[in-house]
Length: 190
Image (cartoon, rainbow, N blue to C red; front, side):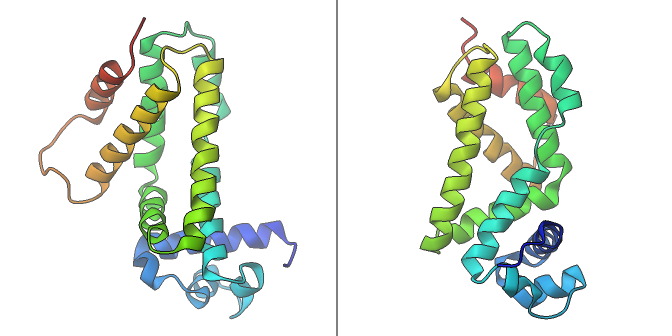
């Protein structure tokens, strides 16, 4: 595999744009080459198989959705209360809804993984690592709740993002207010 990390990132970002715009069916190595403005065959040199390409896109989504340390730093100085959990979850929702192309691409990947065993394995590993990191962060920060509450919050956030970015309930709602209610209902503030 070629070892130019900048080119690999460029291709992954182009692939995410194609995936968000055209869906999994529109994602081909050639479409990625075209979106990146690179010669035909470049993407297939970096990602030999479709599953390798799709798996790399999953990893790149999480890199691009990573939290900003400048936002986390003042939060980390606060008392670990349910209100702090609310603010952390609001920040997660803000990142997901603020980058709809990345969230839609992740949803596309998850659906595609249900049909492709190779991608299922790759994406499951990426999602597991993300979940484990979230649980570790939550526990190490001394926040109320534990692994089960983090899992429930994942389920709730996924549903909120799906409803917000696709044809959902069709009823307007305040995302911050819903996020606050979700956290208060799912995390015990013992």
